[in-house]
Image (cartoon, rainbow, N blue to C red):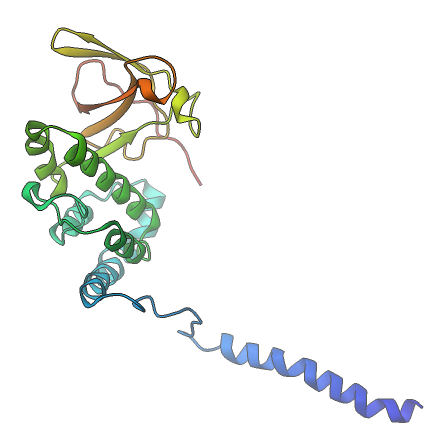
Length: 237
């Protein structure tokens, strides 16, 4: 009968309302999070530099992040402050100014920094990769010449791989370099280069041999090299 159904209907309505009420109560409170403590499983050293990175992100990056994005600012001084904490060459050898940490340590630091400004942290990760490449694959003269000023972020680096006609298929790049005496003559174009135009050192992937990945070499160019020019900045979201 309808009379018998009413209590069950009322009970069902109350049951459905309870989760909604709880959700409203939870959403009304600030600072509630369901994620795992980010320091779980880390060593004491890792917890320490994670905290340093979190504090730096909160104080030096987060308050300015929106302005940097809106005005297309490359925050040089902020990144140099980060470099004073050892974040300019995190997994670069200490003898040229690096911090000598592991890739895991590095990922912990970048994860923490990204809470302040994702795009700035993304660039810093690219800069670190460039310094590591020179440190790892360069000769001693190149290491001593480039790495100290990059680790301190006195100078900044860009990674130049993507081209207008090759991105994910990196081995199809067309930029070429031909040896002429003691120098290389470089011809080609790169696209979507983070920091391009604002940076000082360019780690450039170019073809010195035949087709495919084995024909690719890496050259280091400095800003001001004759023939090096920059196109317009890409308009992004």
